[in-house]
Image 1 (tube, helix red, strand yellow):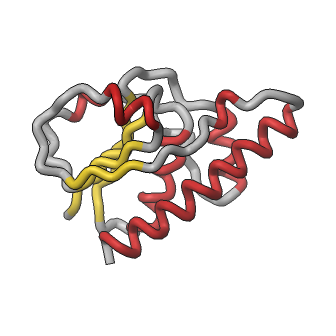
Image 2 (cartoon, rainbow, N blue to C red):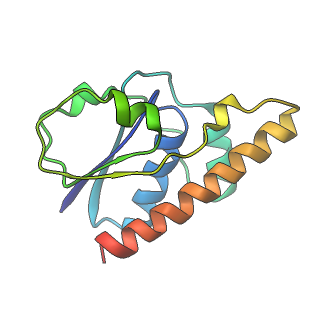
Length: 138
């Protein structure tokens, strides 16, 4: 079974969404973890946006990358430039992949405009996770 880590700055939005979709698309073929170089708690809008697409991430927790130092990851996916540039070193032979997604938590405007940004980023991450599982877990 493959071990996959999704890494972001605060483990609150993008990495949580990716963890949800990777769990969904991998259909039990991998152990999926997400973490941040900091922990900010799971963003309620990320939970709500995922729920709209039928994925429940409400039980997810915000974890620090240091908590997973002993896990032999096969893949480490960074989903923001800050995490890629500031990730603390931990020994791994993992294949490292990177895709910088916009941070929906930084969206401004009305509640509907903010939710629209969350939905847009959710769809980008969903497409990436589907392509990842098709390529690496088939």
